[in-house]
Image (cartoon, rainbow, N blue to C red; front, side, top):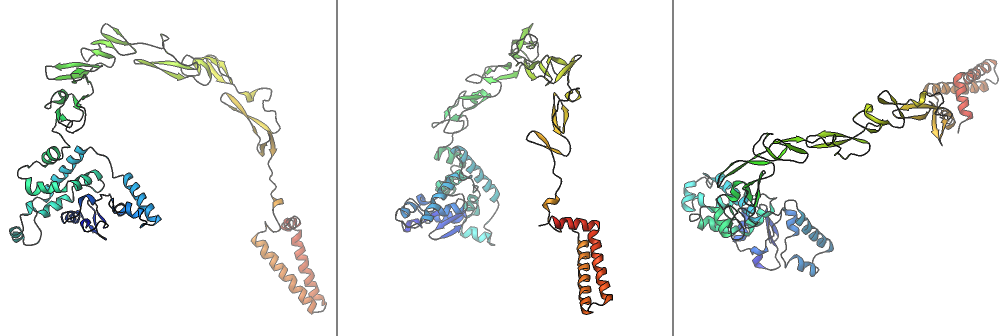
Length: 477
């Protein structure tokens, strides 16, 4: 353990493992046992997982001194520093408000008590164990079982608070529980002083604006309520305003009020100030509306030339405002949507009655595509010159596509499997006849057979397939 020597490494994993000397001991109960058996509490290092814990094991006299004295290799130093960086950036490490962390810890502790209520030691002889040892209800065994479930492994703030204040929890469990049954008040309010009672805030737990019984008159939230932080100022709910949240905001009216109570309801959508919910109870109007006999009437910005739209846009009136929308592409300037509302027609269009219609340039008497092998394709507002089928554009001209691929092929590239078999058989026949003729020393029968085989082969070469083969041979590799 840490107390036995300054060079010995000690660490505890919250809800995970305890490093003792040169081995890991898993489980929070082992970690708690280590701390009670003399481990130096300042030497613990809380880590979200075992891999990081192994890198962050040494205390201030461990890793730094070992690096300074050259005990760690360069790779070990890099790993240790990288582990420290990962430890700081670990997703489970989040900065929580201390009061929130303490409340979370206590709530989970209470859930653990409820879960273990009615259980026993589980040794088989409960009566003897409770007589000789202690009642399970107030035993150390039950405390350890509850402590194991208080903090999630990924909740760094909870684990750190529990490790730092484990002895306080044990003190409350064994000595203070009867006198102070409310663990939240004893631990978070009175002992650690990280929380305040509801309706109070700040280091001295002062009353919030409007009083601790009804902060912000019930119409807002007190900044720092229930914590040792915050300003105590009111953050009013929607529809309420003022330093004490006892006024109605713009667009709301007082539905009911007395000395301690206020209810604000929303005005009609066009009213910024009103005496009731209908459109005829307006006192002031929102922007874009005009008050007339307690009613707010919409201002037509498009009809009064109050709108500010760009040159090729038109105005559309909306409730309390207006929108600018783009003209049709056939128009240069417009008075509304579509090709029939154009002020002037765009290039590539011509007026036909009230509409601006596309001009078909390809139908003109004079060809617009004057290049060789070009054809005209009409499109909306223009046209396009494309090459005819079998031609491709190259250097602004339409050039015929090269379809002759035989020049790139070598001898026998296009020959089929059947043709190969025929040629093999004919070649074999010619060889056999030649050998037989030589053996017969010019016998006329074999000479005739040989001449016939040669003639058959010549006939093949003179056929259509032969012509193709011969052509391939002449142009071959």
